[in-house]
Length: 355
Image (cartoon, rainbow, N blue to C red; front, side):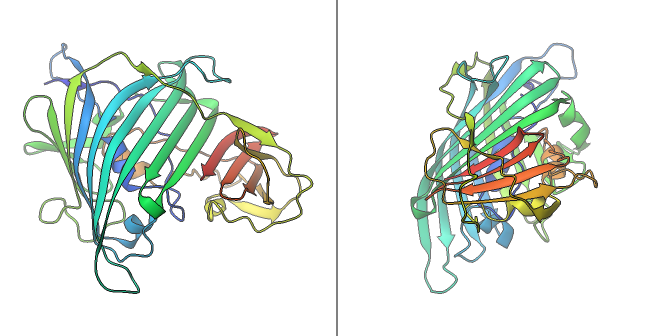
């Protein structure tokens, strides 16, 4: 049996449930990070070349995660994606060149039923997902970037997420083996939603089962996900342009509060009282801050922001967790762009941007 190339590491993506970050694409993204090992010592390293299949959005959560809150649950997503290993040499703050994957392709959503009217709608779009990680060595992640560019007519949106791991985060290489167990002719998720991984023909896999937060799904009699991945020999990563530099912005003279462009992501933190100690960060090149709000954050409970972590681990994607300490959470709104930043002692540790 062959092996998929070793996962690049823990994913930066966290499931910000109130926001429109596409949780269904976490499913897609995970298939590009699975790791298999042969029973013998010799095995080829393969990488995912393409991902095709369907996702059945039966729950309110899965619909909202795509920004489809105006429609009833039950839409069907068809995907056809190409996967490319990438690197970049343009990171301004990096010690080593980040590595990652790029997913590009078509996404069609059918069976959209408006809540306040009859009929059905079909929407065709494009998706680009970029995930990069900077390593100090093979086991430690310094920084991560995730960009989800979702082009779906009036539902189009882009999310940019940055994490700095301080201290650097360990990325165990055997996460897949620990999260799946043998079950008849396939492997099955040990915990979390039911996910089956089966080898089809040579260099081809089928991943089927249940979406996160689904009800009455067993992955066999009822399944909500069916993806096929085609593998190819691992290639050298392609060099891509890096456009995810974060800058600090002066918002001390902004009197307007009531930020809302990135939703209620702040509720994932243990926020306390509001503060005028604004430490605002966003992607470089932004102009015209319209509103700003800041809160102090308590890290006393030592809770991690990774509600999707258990599910991601169960299908083989090393799932990152961000554990905020005491610090400041600041949000700034521009005309059609919003950013949130968690800082500790003035250092940016987590940045979230939506446009």
